Length: 261
Image 1 (cartoon, rainbow, N blue to C red):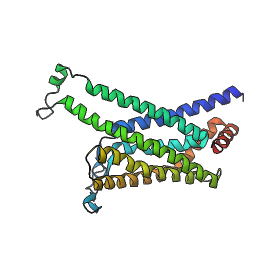
Image 2: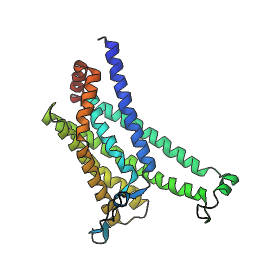
Image 3: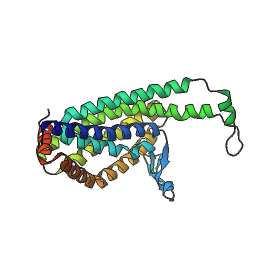
Image 4: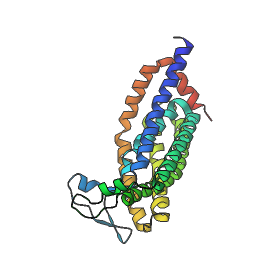
């Protein structure tokens, strides 16, 4: 196979993985302002277990947490084939794009609402007075807090993930993909789960520390379970990627990635 084809495959794979990574990270930021009940979503009553003295433990999660495991798993795959440099590159690109989204949303909030738009939505479905511009700002302003906090947590989590991944890789070599991928994800998501809530909801959102700890704990439990449950997908991804790249190029990329200091 010619060098140009091999280079094209390498580039195409990075573009695909980057697209998955950026799309899920950006959507997770935008929907992160909503807190949902896992129990009620599936038709059950909340657990109501007392936690941290004065807060009831319920599986209340930020909507963005649904997608973050995909981001971290994609990080591990990029790490496996493109090393630290690949992860750093896509991390900085993603931070730039999310920052752009942050500024765009802020500008949209500052635009003067049209009178006809306010009048069309001046009442809700039950006929009660409704200010759609206020609702727009409330939803998106909370999203801005999430975006800012998530950027902080995201960068910290990404570099922790890369560090732990490569430390485990030195121990496991090419074997035990599940250990280095899942292990690094569990450590990085532990940090991500609490940093984002402390910044977004404790410092910027008025939550109590017990609320932050309780929601952070349930978020991490979810991430822990999902990370373990999605581990088989890592092997599926490796199988598909190795089939696309071919054995020679695949081993070459992983060898380069393992030596990426």
